[in-house]
Amino acid sequence: MTKYIIEGGNRLEGCVKISGSKNSSLPIMAASILSGKTTKLYNVPNIHDIEITLQILKVLGCNVKKNSGKITIDSSKIESNEIPQLLMREMRSSVIMAGAIIGRLKNATFSYPGGCEIGSRPIDIHLNGFKKLGINIEEEGGFIRCSCDKIKGAKIHLDFPSVGATENLILASVFAEGETIISNAAMEPEIIDLQLFLNKMGAKVEGAGTNTIIIKGVKRLKDVSYTVMPDRIEAGTFLCATAITNGNIQITNVEPTHMTPIISKLRECGCRIKTGKDEIFMQAPKRLNPTQIKTMPYPGFPTDMQPIFGTILTTARGTSMVIENIFESRYKYANELIRMGAKIHVQERTAVIKGVRRLKGAEVFATDLRGGAALTIAGLNAKEQTKVNNIEYILRGYENFDKKLNNLGAKITIEKGE
Ligand code: UD1
Image 1 (cartoon, rainbow, N blue to C red):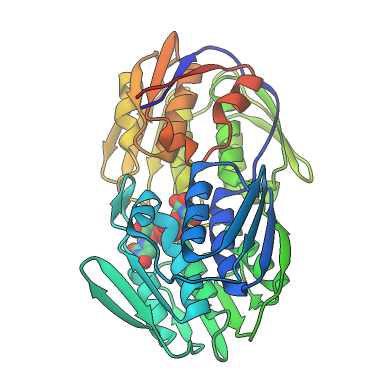
Image 2: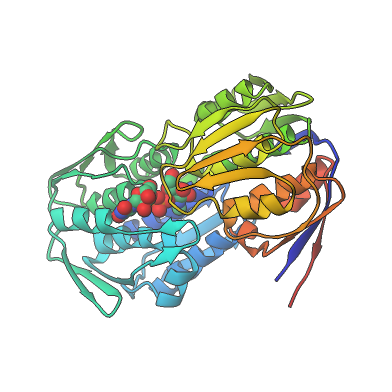
């Protein structure tokens, strides 16, 4: 168990470069399976979840090379159609590989992703969509076997605009016979990135970014080089870390249009924000105003930012309210923040947060990726020392988190555990 030791009370000031998007890299790396050719990806973040994805690709038979932010995947010799259970448990979003494996090989075996730290993660929307595409599904002993002779284009209406299901069904439809129309699709920017990548590889996908996506089946794909979009949640995390330390920041390699719901709420809290083509400047006020946030599918306020934004509201001047509409167990960080002096009352999907002047240092435990980032930025505000245990969660999704924060003036050291 490795921990961050944080000496709080330093304003963040300076410039930080945002890494490539985790949630965009994962489906794009899965999509590389489809081509049977070589994929070169740039701006891929150096984080644990990418390592797991590379391991899965290797087990399937891909030849992969990684050199800093550049990844090369040669999928010409795919041999296996099975995502190993251990790796599936390591990273539940590996279910996204299923659509690409079925698309390429017409069969795939994987295990149930199971529950996770932020709530149950059912895959019924993915599987119902696969069935519509003519894919047979057998479930046995926690394993799911998908098979078909050919994938047939279909009209698929999603019960909920699930990000993963939208991506999985796009991947499974790339080689389908005829046309697939996904309605009530998720509209997240990561889906636009996947469409841009697939089309550069020779696929015919349109509509990403709207709620209707049309995929016209193609027969083959080609080699491709692609630069992954910036990570909007990492960018939001640095803005919030600056907000809670009354700091002043410039963020580069960011797409401001992806940040609209986050920027709008930070402005309500009193932050002065200017955006450029690929940069954001933010000056935080002496004390934040309270506000209300309600998580929603994009373009609503992102659930991944809820723990982080909830944390900055603990020091606002007044009472704020947070409503979590996407994942039911996303308030575990709140109990840890209470140990740091925060005043939070959680009831079901709602948290009422009464702002205190300043948090107090304490020993706390990260319970998931974004909750871990939230506790770290709480530590930046707190009087005295904060220890954040289980930072392995944070390393899953943030590249050089402590180094980037320290470059802005934070004081974080790492204590290695057994
Ligand atoms: C993705 C993101 C995650 C983000 C989430 C919501 C990746 C790797 N992860 O996760 O960071 O928090 O979008 O923006 O991109 N659901 C079902 N049945 C299904 C699928 C989903 O009921 O078959 C429900 C989930 O339980 C959840 C909601 O739909 O309540 C949203 O989940 P979904 O959009 O699928 O999230 P992920 O793709 O897993």
